[in-house]
Amino acid sequence: MILIDIKNYLQSQQTANLEEISRHFHCDTDTVKIMLEHWIRKGRVVRIANPAQCGQGCRQCQPKTAEVYGYVE
Image (tube, rainbow, N blue to C red; front, side, top):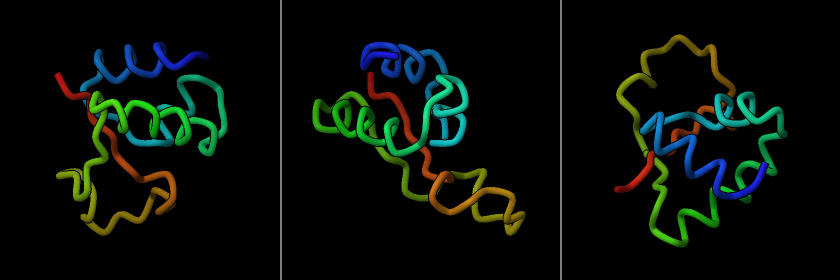
């Protein structure tokens, strides 16, 4: 997995949470977060504070991996 792979994945999905991204690339969440930070600094990815699908009380996601990221056109 390289940085461009993460960018391309988010570009195709538009949004994804940290767990989905790490599962897709078979990589641990800490490594994925480091790579996402690169794209956040470049302005191509944003961290979505309160995604619409979260906060409904299902509690199925771990708070650490429930972070949602979106691609910026």
